[in-house]
Image (tube, rainbow, N blue to C red):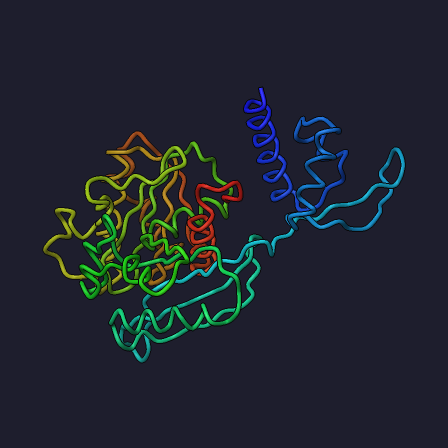
Length: 333
């Protein structure tokens, strides 16, 4: 019997925490009404959450009916995360990499951010820059890393200019710190982040196309609230598609559009997604939409998906990284 009581208590506690995380601020009466948990149980659980500093007792407020009541606020500073991304930059027409880092709380509020040129492509340099954030004094729960490549069983199998192939980020970091490091492909995180930002249904089938300038595209398949990565997590490496495997990166708008339209046609035929999410800063959205509308090939296909364009790369990526570090928790986005 006591075991069942504990299970019920844990379930109620998880429901209440999730509600307060989403709501931010609530009275006890609101908690009971919105969660379906009895007022008596809410009183007990609230005491526990206040004692653990998960929620903070606030001011007295006057509800529309009844006596004044205490307003409780979720403590978004309960956890902090380091969100890192290795991404391409262009300085004087020269391609290079940089490391962008942000320390955020559960609400996504940025507490600290910094950017470093990735001048020395070595694990030692990466660890050195990561350690910079660790020494700032924040009690970090997890670290999320967005990475231009694919990883399988902790080993990089494919990466930007092949510079990170066979790296083992998580294993190397574990030698320096016990803070968990989670690594995920940048195209995947960009797609998931846009899905969250745009409040798309988790039941949708979504294909994300991340096509950086002067680079090969990354493809993401996101369906039923999960990523589909295939064998060795390599699903979505567009550079292995038949029309790209021996091709140079497109250096004109016409070449880019030809490649993109073929990718759209292939994935539209195979998956018939509800939505395509496209990130391609080198070509205007209007130009891409016009080319899609004028495509006789796409017009022949039965499936006519929605099109979404990533408007703010960094914001979408941040949402994706927040999803990564809160995965498998009640606070997942």
